[in-house]
Length: 314
Figure 1 (cartoon, rainbow, N blue to C red):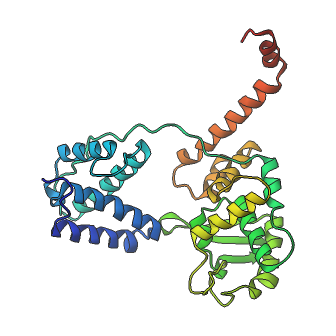
Figure 2 (cartoon, rainbow, N blue to C red):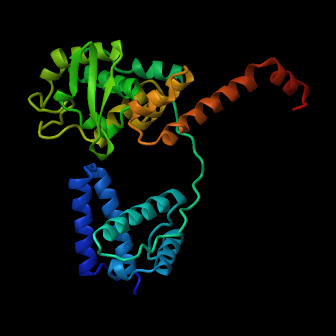
């Protein structure tokens, strides 16, 4: 096999079938499908053989290539390599289910050990500053105010926020959002009074004055044919943060939502449901954030620890 010689015709057809499966059968988001397609394509171009002919030794060579960054490419970190290996494993599961491959060459190949990083969460003071970033009641400022409040009040992923339609906003006893998350799964997310009030103002006063007002999307792009993009959401939030000197991105507010709930003794499973996590283990990451903050508070303020620090005997 010649490294980097390109995909075979059979591999290209199998990859296209996998992309269609992810899109139609799994209901994966556009971004997820594109990421899987890119990762599997890179692998198939490296091995330059039909997928059914690949053996574990080829997987090891590919992983070594990713780590070294050969062929003019930058070296991949552990997290990036783990993601790509997971994508290839999913591809082989698909092939085996259809009888297009007898064996999975990734079997027994361990995922790279990932560094344990805790998600960044804003402090309460930072959130208060950010919530005051939108000034005035112009349509654009009301929209920005609602975007910030929704991200913090619901913990939505930015892709979920972009994908909200007008039909997703349900009124009854308060306001509830019907959110379509990963895998096309729908969950109901309630809004607090503050965000609900801003939603009313946005829908009745601000949104009709913005471009794309006749669109189905809650946050329509200029043409009305598509929602505001993820990139635009990032830009709006970054600009808002810059006004009040808070460094922030949409995923920071998702992490902050979960962390602040758990810090105030919210039920872990309730947080799991609101975040749309399939596994409780994913949600439990936030308990580590809370524990770290509590430990830092204890070290800073408890007489026993502060006294020992002053005495130099810790």
